[in-house]
Image (cartoon, rainbow, N blue to C red; front, side, top):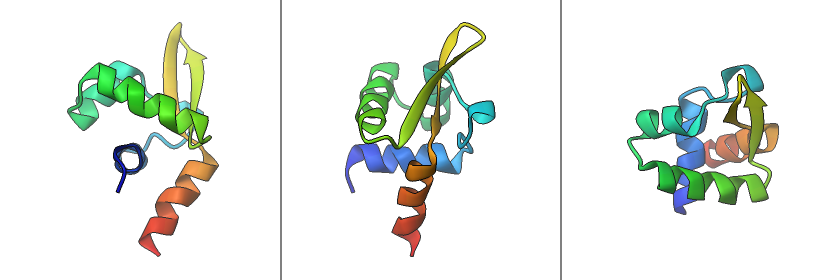
Length: 78
């Protein structure tokens, strides 16, 4: 499984699945125990595939899994 897909599954499993539940890079780094630079690299790959969306809230960049990303994760379990 590619790193970014594993990362997508992690975000899905920690509940970052809507704009209201979106997380900053620092929060994602803490939850996934990854270096912020690695988090950023994975996020950029997943944004390009439209599995992750970036929003701005409270002056911070925040990220969450899109509906396409949720479908991708769920398709892996079926």
